[in-house]
Amino acid sequence: GIEVDTLGTDPTVDDTLLDSDNDTIPTYWEYFWGYQPLTWDDFETIDPENDGINNIEELITQECISDPFRKDLFVEMDIMGDGPNGEKTYFPENSEELITTAFNKQNIVFHLDSGRMGGQDILPFNDDLSRQDLQEIYQEYFLHGNPNTWRRGVFHYGLVVYNADIAGYTFQSNAYQISSSKLEKKESNPILLTDIVYASCYMHELGHTLGFWPIPGHNRFCSYPWQLGWWLAHSYRSCMNYGWTYLIVDYSDGSRRLPDLNDWKRIDYSYFDNEWG
Image 1 (tube, one colour):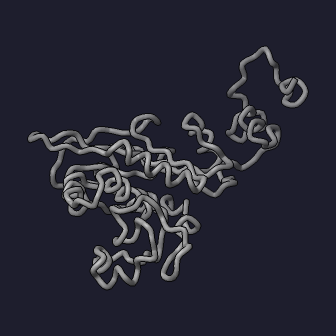
Image 2 (cartoon, helix red, strand yellow):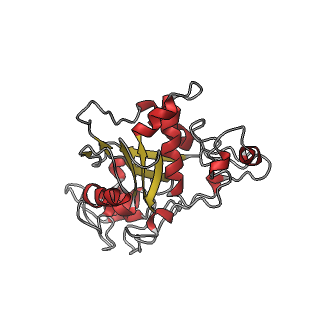
Image 3 (cartoon, one colour):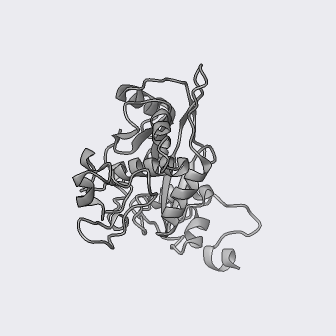
C-alpha cells in the first residue's frame, strides 16, 4: 500500500536503490526516517542531531546501527601486534564497556570499530614510535591512501601501540594514541585498576578530538592529590583533568563548584573534522 499509494513504486520489483528525487539518498530510507522521498534535499548538509555526521554518512553507516536523530560517536581502533620478545599491546574488553556505558548515560551511542565495522588493522610491532611514525600509520592504515575516504568524516582514530613518548596524546584533530607499555606502569599502582586505566586514558585522548577547551587540571601540577594544583582543580571531576585520569571513566557534568565545567554539553562534534589531515 505504501509503495502504490505513497511512493508510486512497484511492490513486485526490488527497487531498494531507487532514488526518485535524485538527491543521493534512496527513497526507502527517506520514507523510513520521515523525509519527503519525492522532494530533493541537500542531505550532505543535513545533520538534525548535530553529531557531525550528515545524513549521507548516516546512510552509509546504517549497518552500524546509526540513527540520524540520535547522537552517534564512531572511533576506529587499530592495535599493534606482538613484539619479538613477548611484548603485548592490548585493550581490555571491559574498558570498551566502561566507555560505552559513560556515553550511553548521556544518550550518545559510542561505536568502537575493533573489526566489526570494516576497520581495525594489526600494525607491525615498533617499540619506539615518533609523531612522524604515527602520521605515516594514519595515512596507511586509516586513510589507506585515500585522503577523501568517507570514513574520515565519520570516524575518530584511536591507536593502541606498545610504546610511545607518553601514555597518550593526540597527533592531529581526529587521531590519538595510547601506549600499553606506559599504561602498564600505571597499573603497578595498587589503587589503580587495569580496565579503568585503559578506558580513562582512551576517553581522555578522545576528548581532545571533541574540542574541549579550557581543561582545568590539565597540567603537571594536578597529577596527584598532594599537589596544590589538584586541590584547586579537583572539583572538575573529569578524566580530562590529570587529577582524575586513570581513576574515573567519565567527563564532568558541571554539577560541582568552580572550576567545574559541563563537558557533555560542550562537546564539539564537528571539531575532529575541522582539519582535513
